[in-house]
Every structure is written in structure tokens, then in C-alpha cells.
Length: 51
Image 1 (tube, rainbow, N blue to C red):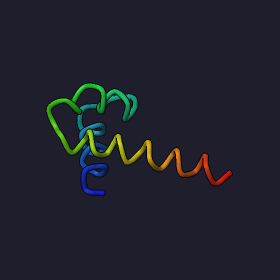
Image 2: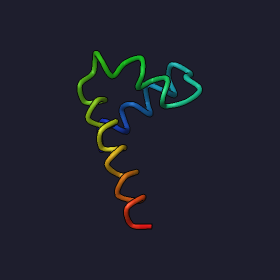
Image 3: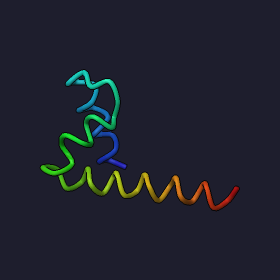
């Protein structure tokens, strides 16, 4: 969860229009952002499977 909060803070500070811009730009240099992306996919897939 900390990494998600960090990525949101980076997005806000740098003025990125979406979190996707931040993750695309910085996930290669910040491994925890890669984990946040993976967790996001897990959450989306879990929701899709429940429906």
C-alpha cells in the first residue's frame, strides 16, 4: 500500500494527468512501483472473476 501512495504522490507532485503516465515513466527505476502495478492487475482480475 505504501508504494501505491508513493506513486500517487509522485503523480501529484509532477503534475501527471494520470497514474499511468507516472507508472510508465518511473516503474523501471522504482521496483516498488512494478509491484504496485502487479497488485493492481491482481485486483482487477479478482473483481472480474467475482462477476
